[in-house]
Image (tube, rainbow, N blue to C red; front, side, top):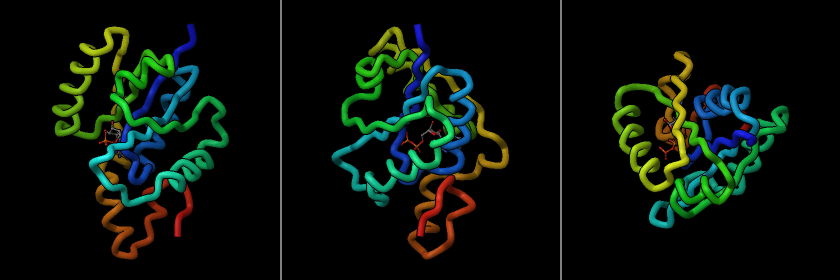
Length: 151
Ligand code: ADP
């Protein structure tokens, strides 16, 4: 059975921290699907179609990586696409607290779903979408933090 991992998140925007997890995951799984979760209650800052394009370009060299949008529960979407693994990144203990409870809930909803955590590469641990968004809003060049070119 092929091992398919879903890497879910808002990716507003997708950062080098995310890219590092996907890249490392692409050697562990047959397929990694980056799932951009759409939450109708939250407005995004970076347009979703632009983000899909930029992520696709950043992973042109990894044919087993793709991007999809979803708006249902992450555990249900994983089932829908035949993913038995959720891939997540861990930066610090705050991530751990949050991820721990989500992983338990997801396991409860979908018993076949294993969450696999990769510890962030240390040089990327401080990067968060929130910080990158703030920098971008204030006109800073964010090219050190994202794996693509953006004006
Ligand atoms: P969410 O909306 O679920 O918080 P994010 O887009 O912020 O989604 O993050 C998705 C996943 O990427 C989470 O597992 C998060 O811990 C991980 N992640 C975020 N930033 C980094 C980083 N700099 N290094 C490694 N993993 C990260």
